Amino acid sequence: MYTIRDVAKISGVSKSTVSRVLNNHPYVSFEKRKRVEEAIKQLEFKPNQIARHFRTKRTNSIGIIVSFLAHPYFSELAGALSEECRIHGYNPVLFQTFGDRTQEMDVFKKWKSKELDALIVTSTALTQAELDELSDNGVLTICNEAYTNNKIDVFCLNEKKAAYEGVQHLLNKGRKKVAFCSDDLASPSQQARLSGFKQAHLEMGLTWDDALIVDNISSVTDGYSLGKYYLSFSNSRAKTIDAVFAGSDFVASGFLKAAQHYGVEVPLDFSIIGFDNHPISEVTSPPITTIMNQTKDMAQDLVEVLDMRLLGQDRPFMFKQYNGILIVKGTT
Image 1 (cartoon, rainbow, N blue to C red):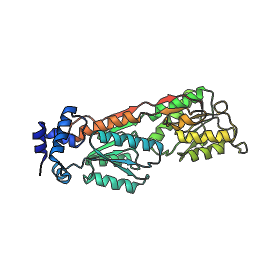
Image 2 (cartoon, helix red, strand yellow; image 1 turned 180 degrees about the horizontal axis):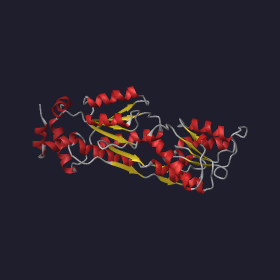
Image 3 (cartoon, helix red, strand yellow; image 1 turned 90 degrees about the horizontal axis):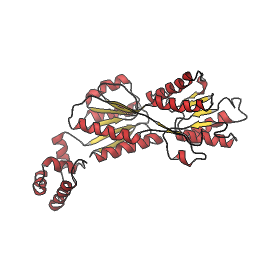
Image 4 (cartoon, one colour; image 1 turned 45 degrees about the vertical axis):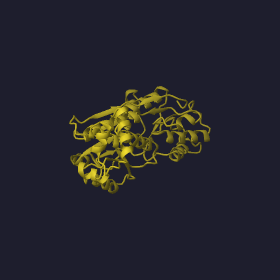
């Protein structure tokens, strides 16, 4: 039975280079990779994965916790993180926890027992204190939520600034009755958005209506139902809203459909801002003004740092925020 040593000897490279090729690591020159691949083919070499895992005490697997994969943003984020893990030679393992603490803790147990080399958390039902305690068990990275911890790398969008700029845009258009939609107001990211929403009002010397801050709104159907509630001419609350910070492009598209159903002209009488710059924002009529996040850059930076930690590099823990980009289209 041939070993990595035999492959290295025939290809004229080090054993570590052979290992990197086997793990599909990107940092191998084309010429060396080709020689290794030819040697593997010549020897019909098949690495003993189980033996390698016992020897290195590594599984080469990265766990990614996502609450709801059906959520457009989280499906995009999970895809970007999975792709970056693959590029760096790791096997991404997705765990959909449905926001359930018990299911989430089961994933943490797998990570703690070394079934996973590292864990990426995109959303969590755990508290800051619980994450602090768990961070001692290995390589843990937070993606999307703005947790502060000196023992965990955190990569997230500056949600407060993004919401502030979006709502400021609405107020500058003369809107004064702006609804705020959240999918989970208890999360740090949504709290940050709400803070930006309020800051934009305060700086304009305006007040907001707490009754227009609505939680658990995440789908096209949710947006359409809420839009009908506010925009129906038969509703006593009609005309108490002249704009919406929808929280996602899907919710925004639901509001747009409701407005069109009741003959409310967008953007003449009603303005809409979505979030995420999803392709759906381009195919509506009119196209939806939205805020583009930095999902790809965030995933690239996160996995690069995670890879360095798994390779044993000691470095200060990172808290990095990315700025959203307001993209003005037809609904404002």
